[in-house]
Figure 1 (tube, helix red, strand yellow):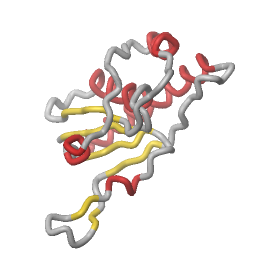
Figure 2: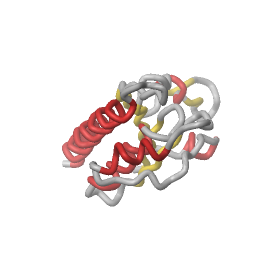
Figure 3: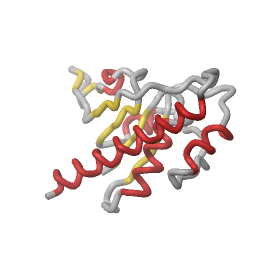
Figure 4: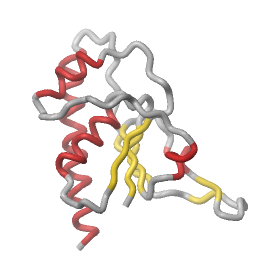
Length: 146
């Protein structure tokens, strides 16, 4: 299975979800990637890294932006946020006659604004929410595989 985690910028939520998935997933038949739709500007990787260090992951990948190949690549899509509409992944069928729904799951997780006074704490809390979502997701995948 090809699994794509998506958020608006791919500089935190989808990237953290992919990192946790790679760390916790035992099924080596699942390939995961992460992407966003907008090129991020002026974000602080340093503050984000501090928030995730206690969870044992590193944000050592640059944000990947969606292109046509990546858009078509996944078998399953997980939107890690509340700011990317699910319908954006509906795709025309082979003869371009109608739209078909793709296998999309949405985790409604708010982004953390850089200007928040408690940015570090909110980022830590968001990281915990993503970790919990990934664990539940992996449990569901394992149940489906049985």
